[in-house]
View 1: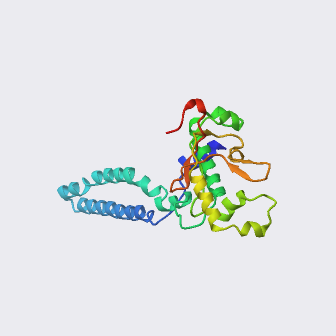
View 2 (view 1 turned 120 degrees about the horizontal axis):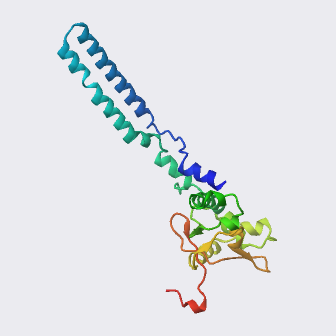
View 3 (view 1 turned 30 degrees about the horizontal axis):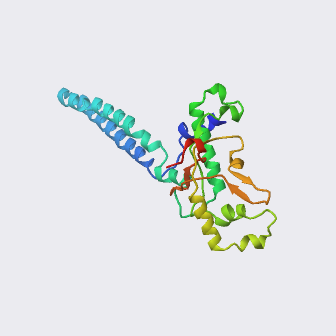
Length: 237
């Protein structure tokens, strides 16, 4: 499965036609008309037994053919690749729409698995995840301004026994405090485990979630994950 995901990203290029595929078609039409014109002109000069003009009309065919092949080799792939704007919308580039931590976490796992498949041998791709988790993950999903706040933050901070009314009456100041607390946490790089999403949060006996120290938030909603330094390692600068 990771190998298939890797192929979907790095081998298969989805077709997002932003109008660019029309230009190769127009180019082929012009080149075909040029070739037909040169051939007809050469035949006409041969029928009139004009050797010089016939040779002059036939000679440009070879440079024209070489030029067409060179241009297709240089530019055709760019027209067949996915359009940059449409592709960027797939990974959350449009921040004007509301998103969620769950969707970004799913997309992050997809990318991590695809990159793992590029480095892990084929013989290891079908084994257990614990054996193939060889690639460090320096990034995890963090809250973002465009998130549905109640879904991603508030629900985690309330006990599971809280009623729906209690969940919906959380003040804006509490939400602001949650953002400040999460953005001020620091630590070191962690590795993927079988239950990495569960390991990010630990439930206390009171029923509340306590997040593992997360992260310096970036504008893209993904940041570097850290674990606190031990006492013998010294204080972090």
